Length: 485
Image 1 (cartoon, rainbow, N blue to C red):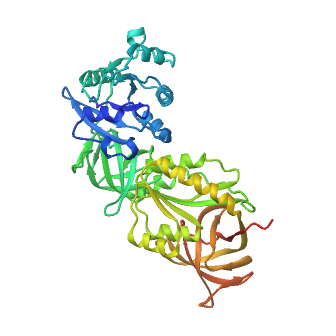
Image 2 (cartoon, rainbow, N blue to C red):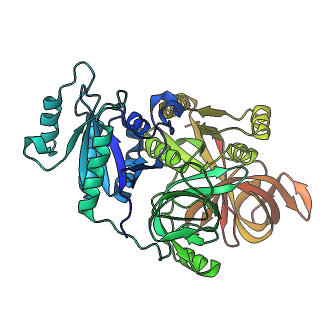
Image 3 (cartoon, rainbow, N blue to C red):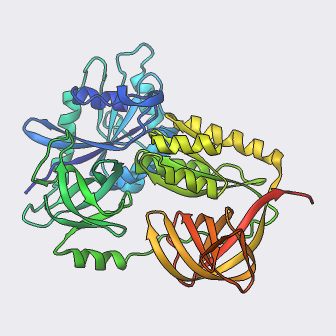
């Protein structure tokens, strides 16, 4: 059977993509909900025109979200390039063109804001041709529709053009098959747990199905359409699934499995995330961050922008990152790793706020991505003046793990070098690579609390961290101290 086309909407940051979608579906107003006047999430919306369904993926135009734009194009069948008629081709317009061309999908140009003073249709078309986009009126093959989101002009013509291009593409699916598709967003609900927005491209997804990707699996406990209504099954639509054991990675393909065992087996065969490169930090200044965001797409964009900040003098390390509210565990981890807690469009639990204030741990939240990035820049510049360096004080080999409780463990081990001291920062080294960060909250010898344990001694540790330590791991203890060189 024929399936609905999946359409990605791309373009410059303020050329009217969100307003165009709002005009298409007036009862789903996304522009007014965004901070700083820009769309900062990826979402999927479904509309009906002339008795046929169209699925829209709204991807942000903000430069921080280039990875999300690229992913949106890969999953889509058709791309709508929105260009403001009064502004013409901008840098992010050029980026969007390249993304569409690399994805190899048909393009439709929506020449938006055509009713504004200064709109110059022919000038914009010439600029597009200079970027290898040749519209039909200039002898090319790319359809171009004049639109105005505010005046509701050209909306019907745009939808008709999308359906025409989709007919030529002959998109089909088989609802009798088990569902297959792609993860386009993930989030954490404090009440319902992990959820993911799935785009079902083929087959039918049903409540109770076992769904897996390369990074996560779960049982579809709840299925909701894009309007939030519960459904028992869905075919070729965007759907929110609640029930994943962990967050799947955005952009991963998903499939339905016969059993939990087969999903786990598929998961165990995944290619592991690229290990953190080990480098000597002795003598280097560094800034540690615990980063939380409301959804995985925002987190991905933040990590990408932070990674390209200049780090010649200050090394920026994200010791842990995640989706959801900032909890006390995040703040305790920041305390243990000398880190700052930064949240993007997240809430702070009362216990986390109280702990941060009591222990003087820096904790800040932001609603606009540039504000967060600018704050990190300021802190990095200020940190250059403090001239703190890392000093390794000892290491311990984990012999056994006696208790696991959320982010805490009781560990038994032997000191192999130097000394281990309670209250200091710890790196978990596994197979020669840094696997995680944490802090030794307490040290015991012969079941008695002590301040430290020395080389060759066996001891117990109360460890809190971003990873569960395992027997055979090396725990590297270190402190920050003024640089006296």
